[in-house]
Amino acid sequence: MNGFWEQFTFYALAVLVLGSALMVVTLRNIVHCAFFLIMAFLGVAGLFVLLYAEFIAGVQVLIYVGAITVLILFAIMLTQKVLGVRLKQNNTLSPLGVVAGVSFFALVGAITFGSAGNLFGVHGEPTIAPRITTIAESLLGNGSYVLPFEIASLLLLVAMVGAIVIAREKDQ
Amino acid sequence: MTLTRIAQFIVGLLHLPQSAVDWLVALFVAVILLVFVLLSVLAIVYFLRKLLGKIQARLGPTRTGWKGWAQTAADALKLCIKEDIIPTRADRWIFTIAPIMVFVPAYMVYVVIPFGEGKHFVAKDLNIGILYIIAISSVNVIGIILAGWASDNKYSLLGGMRSAAQLISYEVPQALAILGPVMLAGSLSTQEIVLAQSGGIRHWFVFQSLPIVGFVIFLVASMAEVNHVPFDLPEGESELVSGFNVEYSGMKFAFFFLAEFAASFTVCALATTLFFGGWTSPFGSFLNYGWWTVGWFFLKSCALMFVLMWIRATYPRVRVDQLMEFGWKLLIPLALVNVAIIGLFVVLTTRRVP
Image (cartoon, rainbow over all chains, first blue to last red; front, side, top):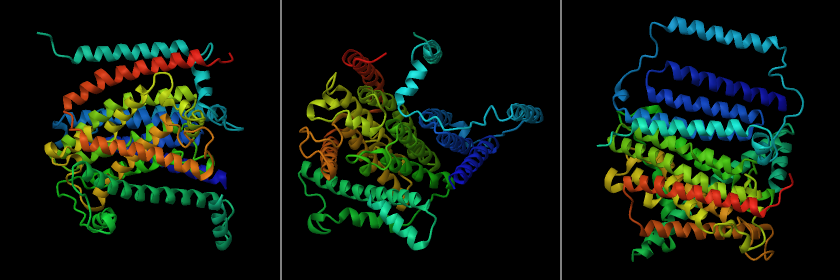
């Protein structure tokens, strides 16, 4: 019974994510695209919950839905001219894009099935992080990812300062 | 637990499989929370109108029922039966979905609010409780932006844009202020944060390390997050007629209204949980069990709700530039300093086993 509902939820979420993603690249109204982007992100968060990765699901909603999409929407509305235009989502390079997409998908599929279920076929008890400190320990504890973490924050800071420098008006 | 017993009774009566019990209990909890949200909003609006009346030296509602207590119920009924208008040039789908996207997060947040002691008074004690609240409540801004855009009205669009800028800006200090109690408790679970403050008024996080500052930052940022009065720019009546919801009527408007008041109660409940010891008694072990804890929780939350109403009655609206300067130049640096001091406090006071 439990397995059935898990599968049912997985396929429902998969349909949500893939359907929304398809809508994002086909619809001609950019705000509708943004709305379906939100749906796709929420579906991915649902998949994380299904994998018992609640922390990542929360962060997914917070960052992708609550911040990035809001920023996208905000940018769309600041560029007033786009609102009236019917977007054209394809151009002469579309066939090449399809070829690239299909071959990438085939590659991922080949890797997945070639590894005989070792890559994604996780067996045994789900590893639930019981406390948030467990995640913190494994991310920032002794001899783990402290340096990459700090470098990433530095990179983001530099990007932010750079953006401000580019965007600000010239001093008189 | 009585709910489980009721669910088992129904399952037995209808010959459903045993696994349906959990589903029924979840459904009951969802319905109870929904009813709680609706009733609490009715009560909050009534007391708000009475209190605004008192502060402004007038009476407030008096006609419907004794001292006008049925006024908000009558208003709610009126909103339900009002005509539901969708402007011709509006984007029908987005216009309809937007109020739902605003209300659903405001309602979902109630899942992790600890109303009392133990497992019976919290719908689900998630181990990411606080993160869940921040994440879910950040979704509702999308509903507001979409509502503003879909109405195809320049005032609505301006309201939506203001709202987006405001919510992005004040999410940062709010999250940083919430980080303080999380660091002190060492957990994101709402129940564990409450338990870390048990033992009376001295242990409340509002008085720990740097006293009061974290709470004030949280309160100010949260008021901006829920468009509470000094920060109600997205719907400023005198500038934008009514902002993002100007084209809405009937039940769709009611959803915005509900979400706003449900969110302002959430702010109070969250402040109680994070800073004022949640459902624990302020006097050590005095009346610190069972239903009394629910009483303490509501006493503290309602006191905070009163403070919010008081602010609503007394402060004028800030300007857009003041809002941004205050948020980015004062609140965020202050919140960062607060986090640094609390971090130092935690490292110095707790002796951790390596």
